[in-house]
Length: 245
Image (cartoon, rainbow, N blue to C red):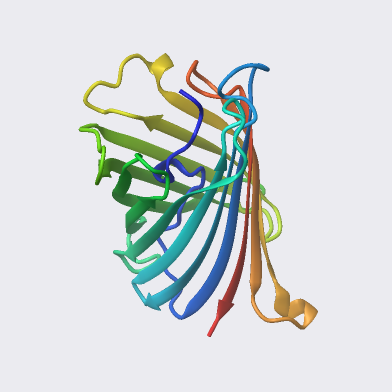
């Protein structure tokens, strides 16, 4: 099968925290590398989304996904429209970890392909680190299910984890892991599942220092495939602009 991450397996780690009355625009991209004639080589995915903190505990986002599968010789095509909801379950910093819950509906725009529902918890913990800096650990554990026309009976699982060393707001190096199973009822062997891991660099800059409103964030990572069903390598990047009202 060609490497084509479903909406549930968009390669990013989500935060459980909601910023009330904050508007955001976000762009995520992914480019894979593998053997020259492999279905896992040269595939691209781009998502664009806008979000808003509707309440102190609920953030709503609307996303469109554009995708290219190199082996099939496709041009960029609109793949899905998605509605994402993040619910902050616990107040930040009050308990051992911060907890959120994620609910997503992805409406497929490709004829004959089913839509998808994604649900699951988000856990985040800040802990002591090195060099006088703290570390931030985040885990997403989502269950996926196809819905609508031509839906299958499988239940999938997608896990994303990231640990970052908070050296400086502009420079937070870390590691991340993505694990994707198409059918938890019949997962097969580990080599039949998708596992990607590698280093990531993240940061944020308050534009007020330059006399402009808002804040920008970035993440850039390189992932190594650990199984036969994973691309040998993948580059991902994420840019976000935030503006509080």
